[in-house]
Amino acid sequence: MEVFVLAVFGCVLVIVPSILLGVWLFRGRCPRCGKLFAARVVGSSKMATIMSVDTIRNPQTNATEEVAMRETGYLVTHRCRYCSHEWERIETHAQRVDGLTPHELDEIRRRQL
Image 1: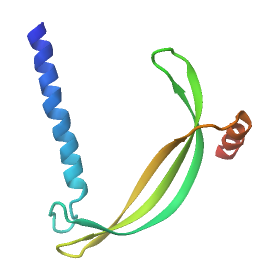
Image 2: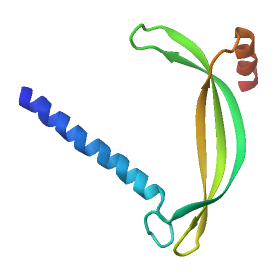
Image 3: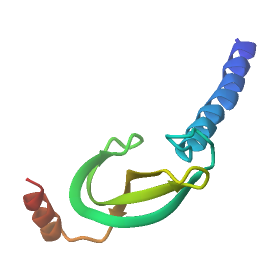
Image 4: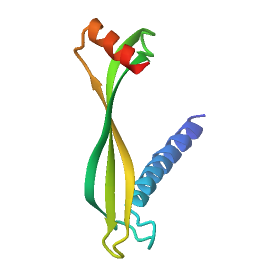
């Protein structure tokens, strides 16, 4: 049993970083010529900022909590440094907003509907 656990743990240590590395490598790949590390950011514009109220559950205490989230979307323009092909990608960034009063949470929830 102990050998099986070590084998599974070893596979996880190899496979998960390999997948993450592959995703990271292909993110900077040019869609036209296919070269890696070719993407250069040439422009970025803020599209929208959305505030929302989400309910999260703490798995240890099984307690639920309402939190405010700020999600910002950006339109990012990339250019290949080899073939000068340009493409756009939408990227989002989410951030938890702490310190809001219950009244402010209700206001965000009302605008969310």
